[in-house]
Length: 337
Ligand code: FBP
Picture 1 (tube, rainbow, N blue to C red):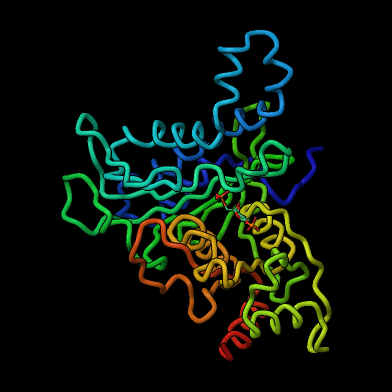
Picture 2 (cartoon, rainbow, N blue to C red):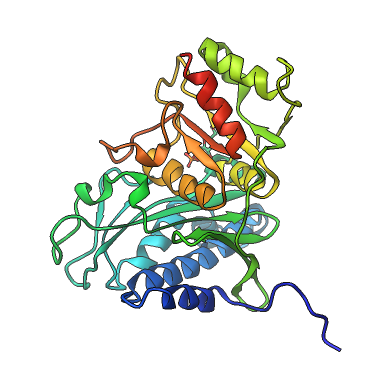
């Protein structure tokens, strides 16, 4: 007798179609972008899985394999995403953490009404030590007149304008978590069949967090209100139980743990980086959209990060994201700044 399990076997493709059906006016273009991103994620996953083999394989056919395998993985990941998305006829431009300017869809390809912003391999400094890394993406509808190449103007939209956002974590398993504004849903890659299967439908982040993710090596560069806030999270002012500190140094990995288990990721501004370190458009905004869809919150220290009007493609922002009660505590303490 077949066991009655809570989750049926649902591929990401099927899930995307089911969600699209809720919008009779949908053209399928956004679904197409999500499909192509899932394919790119599988290709990057297979490269990331190989990374640790470079040394072993190198001895055999050094130039060829080594060259291919030892090429900087984030450069490879960047190329994979561009190649998977540039010819589908759904995008008019892209922007990547790896590229200074915007990536225009070549004339030879049909252009669409969306733009894609992405961090091809977040936490890439952790690859060589086999710590989880990730890909982060954000999709916006163009605002400039249709037909021609997209422009920077199409990228510089506040986060609440996102029509889709997501990330892929290349960890003990490869997972893709995304939202189109209808909740946040997680899919795990089954490498045996090469399919992302629904494993975490409608993710809800606990109201109060267990984990605190912050690099406190910067403490001496923090403002007094930030130091006060961190003392609060550590339970040192008796207003709450201490949170467990967990910091991988890969935003996607720290965010993912906190999304599922409850927690707060913080990258405050500090004297050395007055704007913080993380990029608003393709790190902060997409994860904030997912977190809000899962019942959490995200601020830049003073306001809801999804309401920040961007002015530059690669602008940075202070960032506090995660369980609602802990983000509210951040807003309260930092209001004293
Ligand atoms: P990139 O690797 O994409 O530049 O990301 C930045 C990042 O590595 C985040 O993943 C991580 O949260 C943060 O920087 C770590 O910064 P720090 O070493 O200053 O704590």
